[in-house]
Image (cartoon, rainbow, N blue to C red):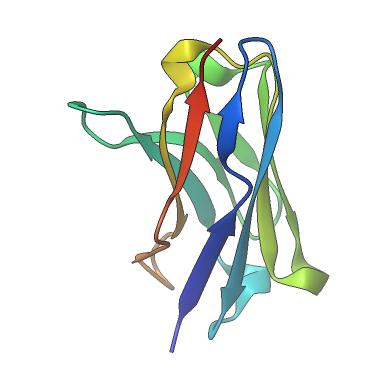
Length: 115
């Protein structure tokens, strides 16, 4: 059974930082293409960042230079380091195992950026 468990969300002031973690079990994590998505109230879910099994990364333009996706295959974990957070980053953040091993979604973690 494939499971993804996200953590690390919370309330942070504008300009602050958070690190999200997603622990994966039940699949061959080291070769899995992974991604972080987010969904703000009233908006569609959007791709934030992705990382291949080989470590290649991509980002949506709105987070380039502020967010970093990484993975630790020894810990079956993918991370999203978020710096210089803005109110518009407020959303539920979801971890995804991308095809062909997925898609499998995590339950989401709330990130709120507010003063």
